[in-house]
Image 1 (cartoon, one colour):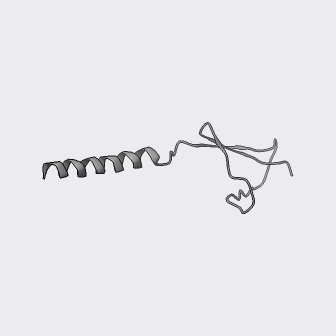
Image 2: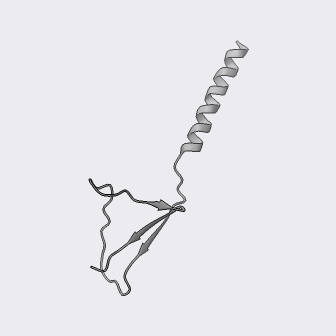
Image 3: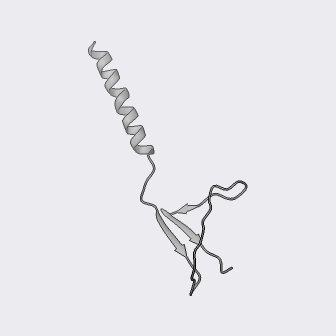
Length: 68
């Protein structure tokens, strides 16, 4: 009985540690580079078919808005 209790405790601990280590970080900084004198609105579409994925480098997500 005591041995099975330790097994259950060990399994629960492993699941909790695995979940904690694999959870996503919310510390990503989002930076928008807009052209000088930009006025107006922008739309950002992501997860589009046949397009490259967004890149997060050093916990920073960078959006560069073109001049046109």
